[in-house]
Image (cartoon, rainbow, N blue to C red; front, side, top):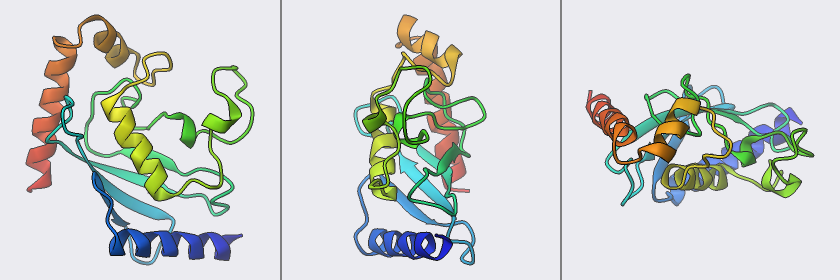
Length: 169
């Protein structure tokens, strides 16, 4: 499977370089490792995250696309579906099959038809519309639900500013 997954990832990277998708850019962390990607997500317009540049790593398993990659923001981000350590928690990045907690339907979880593009579009959508029912960051989720224009907005704005400063270092 390793050869096939590497070939598929090379093809997806070439396609993204040839036809960039609005809202993110993608490349390899190390040109010799097709399984370790770096992406930059641009904060979606008309959201609290607008203007931010959020660097993240996508780590693909060698049996991709049968199993999902792991995604971790390197840039600090305050969001209900991003753990404080940067790990992204969205349905399509969860292992395929039944959810042992019964929260997600199998078709909402990882499917081998997903690509880097569909993952990133889901992440951008997550930034615009957090899922407060299944938070990875309970504190951010609580602030988002109880005071979205107060403390939550202030913390997101601080992360946006820090991301802009880091983007131009």
